Image (cartoon, rainbow, N blue to C red; front, top):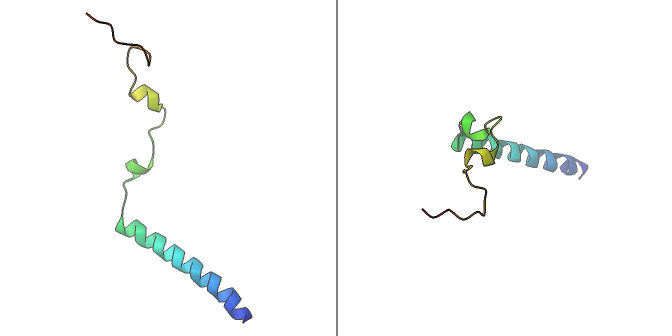
Length: 59
């Protein structure tokens, strides 16, 4: 019985690791998709000239 208490968690850990590797092979991702650009804050990429909440001026 003590052997089962040791072997079952090790077997389950192995299954989880194998499924993780299988997922990586099944759904590959490029390195560019995994990493965010460095030095570019998310708000700077979509900034406008007027502050948020300011209505547009009419011509």
